Image (cartoon, rainbow, N blue to C red; front, side):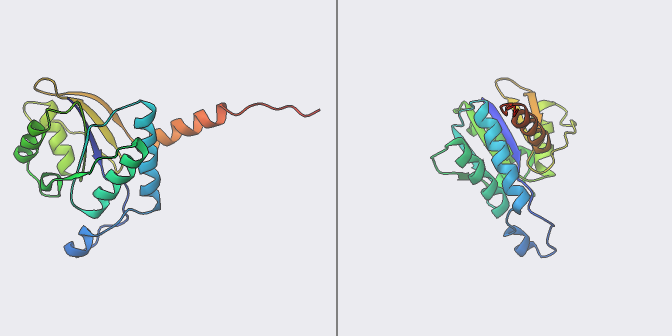
Length: 175
């Protein structure tokens, strides 16, 4: 199984009230990050079989926007294991239950996702991987420990997209 681990996109500043923070939506930059990540996965022709998201609004919006870019038509599965405060053991049980799929996208929050990723690729669980907002990582879970294939930051995708867009323009000469 290929597990794509996506940290939710930009959602502005954290709110001091936890009830309001759960309902914090993506901001304009976050929506653009989702479109970029979805376009990136679409360009790689990644067939996502299942999307699992944290129930918090910003993660669900991220999953929905990326899924739309990918043409994902099934429902997005919600999982409390991906919510802030989830444990590594609960996440590993979730991943084990998803092993019947080939390509799974999970959307969650930091610092939990960084810890989950570290536990998946290192038996001691001490790997430290920084996941900025909108960053996607791919882990090959066919054996234990998992193998980290890639970590892509949305800033890199934006630069890549801009360099390709500039070079693909047709040159015109006016005499």
